[in-house]
Amino acid sequence: MFIILAFIILFHFAGVILLFVSTIHNAWWVVSPPEREVIYADLWYSCNSTCYPIENSHTVEAAYLQVVQATMILSTILCCISFFTFILQLFRIKQGERFIFTAIIELLASLFVMIAASIYTAQNKSFHVTSLQQGSYGSSYILAWVSFPMTLFSGLMYLVLRKRK
Image 1 (cartoon, one colour):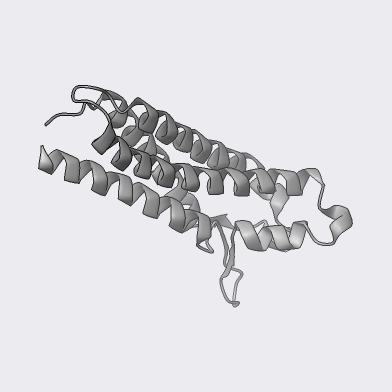
Image 2: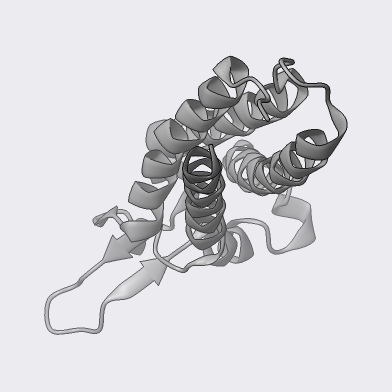
């Protein structure tokens, strides 16, 4: 039982790390112009160029990007909360009960990651200025998509898991 518990905690912790890195790291969009330095455009750099000045902060383009930012932050927070909820439920629930509350929070985190990555996929050309549109997806974008099935599987695992001795 200890080995299964350690596997679950490590798997969840790996998902949290992937979410943190994909949200914070500067590589959602990569542009490599010929004979120039590689340009990395992340969620925060792009917002600085689309959300400034203040009069333009409520454009459709900025709204899409702000939804991606908000859902990635929310998914990271929910994944952390579900980890602490799991630890709390590990000591509080009775033997034989399921970790339903932890599973619901983790599945919501998975849903928000999917929403953020899907919106970024569909609207990525509208976020960037014309000079940055000829790029490709970066490592943070890929990590966001990798963290989606990890958090989904983790949430389903909590849904099935029962507390034992």
